Length: 435
Ligand SMILES: Cc1cc2nc3c(=O)[nH]c(=O)nc-3n(C[C@H](O)[C@H](O)[C@H](O)COP(=O)(O)OP(=O)(O)OC[C@H]3O[C@@H](n4cnc5c(N)ncnc54)[C@H](O)[C@@H]3O)c2cc1C
Image 1 (spheres, helix red, strand yellow):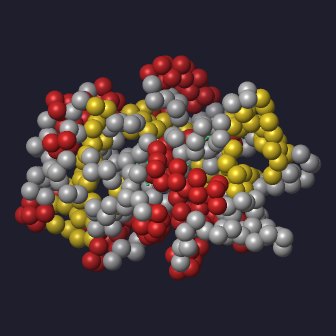
Image 2 (image 1 turned 30 degrees about the vertical axis):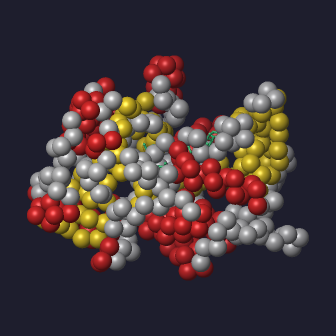
Image 3 (image 1 turned 90 degrees about the vertical axis):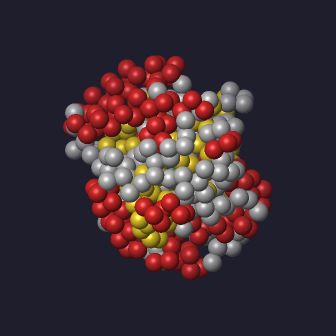
């Protein structure tokens, strides 16, 4: 924001460092756009396309790992082969070049990945592996060190937001400083609520009506033993069994460090921070009560859908049974043995919005009320799309006059000099719909 406008920016973060939650607890993929339907998931599709170029430049510029390892998605039957053909079309529509994506038959797959078993596959070269946790820490230190327009207030949990004047031009943000155990306040003229899974709670505290409810799903991983590190040279996905839901089936992941993992599943939990059974047991009743008592609640439409129950039971069972989870990947990578997996990876929690009809919301939601922008449903590939979507948002806010440039200061230098072509593509093609 400070590089496109000359605003003074304060980032308020409850933890000791930014990005300790979902941004450090994910699969670490710079996702290729072929898995996103260009009509239904248009924001994610374009964000994935340009995210690759942003992260590649950022990582190279800073000398950190950006492994261009590509991805293979496998199909086991005629139905999932049809999905591959459809995804090839989506990939091209979303902006991939013919040379970056192709369908492989069984024989072609076995030449590239001899350990893989499938009927057919899609190979996309424009997919990479990074460590988003490391990147977030680096970005945070760069913007707060070099850039005097940006301040990061850590250990500061926002507890209340109120307006200081009747015209709602000035906003007071109250937060608890956990180092000094005191309540503090800071003022601003524009606020972005980008608090991940907590965004909807902040929206609710402002009593803003909306049709959404949030469900939480924990994505868990198992770390593969070293001897499996060279089983494949690509990360491997399979066509998801339940394509109407916003989850992929567990994959074979190659991390940017070269280690491999199996995951993530999508086990239902009851808190955005429900990493442990203790937290989930504590939050179970309040969450269920909250879901059932919301005005106009249609969450039962989601819960009683047959496919949803099938999905949830499969995903929950993958959480309880290591063997079951690993076997979902063993289906296409028969060389792996569940007994050899002994270490759990770092789980992350998705907060997914359901609308008043009980359907999962496919895109991120941007709600603006009285100088506050609330970003909701910011799921996968949110890490991939972080740069393009942030730029697109700031362009849109400037265009609408919601962020104003003053004459006294000039915008700060960008963390790295992204070229205008890339920035203009984000401005022109990523459709940020403020509602
Ligand atoms: C299992 C899993 C795998 C994924 N894999 C990928 C992937 O491979 N590629 C990809 O592109 N995307 C992936 N994603 C999605 C991606 O990680 C997220 O879209 C992205 O990290 C979300 O970023 P965020 O900043 O919105 O949320 P977060 O990273 O959770 O940040 C929100 C921040 O707000 C802070 N906060 C919350 N409430 C308050 C408060 N009251 N006061 C102050 N601070 C507050 C939190 O402490 C946190 O630091 C994955 C997600 C999951 C769960």
